[in-house]
Image (cartoon, rainbow, N blue to C red; front, side):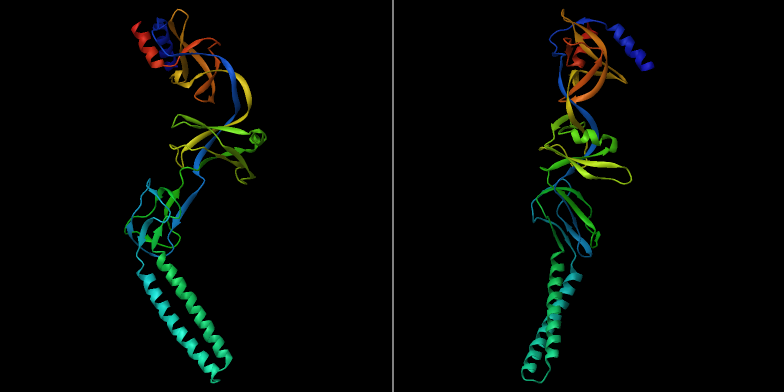
Length: 325
């Protein structure tokens, strides 16, 4: 109540003044997209979490969050001494099994041993070969490389940390392929199925973009009874995974009176715009606003008429009003 009283006094004290060279727009009713909004989060379409595949201490870290990497770039090195010892043991076992197999094969050919002995020697040799290959692969896991080109979203380990199989080390995503995911309650599903387009608002960026596609997933969460909707985005360089966004699903069109959002002056719960009369004088007009309608516009429910000239720079208008110019 106190805020509204102060704001009312401010209006009374600065009722009118002559404006000079202020940017204005004429408020008009025009066709705008209508629908319903939904909160959402940005996520990467192509994202990979790189995890450790062997146990060892982290020796060298070559990438950090925010860094762009190419496929195959070395990201980290892990101490692989245990893997090296296992590989040497596997190599020795393989050499011994190969010699035994060749010897057994010769003895069977001379009929000094049964064919069953040869089958066992062959099986031991094959097992040793497989064990050697697995040990060699484990050695290669000590060098962590980027599985795809993109940007490192997060690094989970520092030099000296202990890596264990399955422990995440890096998250990498491709910045050119992003989407937002919204959760839609069941009572909105009928409207959702009628929506063929969507506009995505990034409040932190002050930006609106048109979605490239809208996909309602055919399942619902058993606990919350909501369904997920995936909205693919065009290239938005400023957007990053995890960022908040608001999706405005478009279900039709309607004639609405709107003003640019930048023209609205807010004091607590009170909203107003500066209106310029035909003689150039300014007046501060309180408004009742509706929802944003995209492209930086906001619906006016009351307080303004079609044809009113609205000042789009309320700060400059306020300065002129106070100075009486």
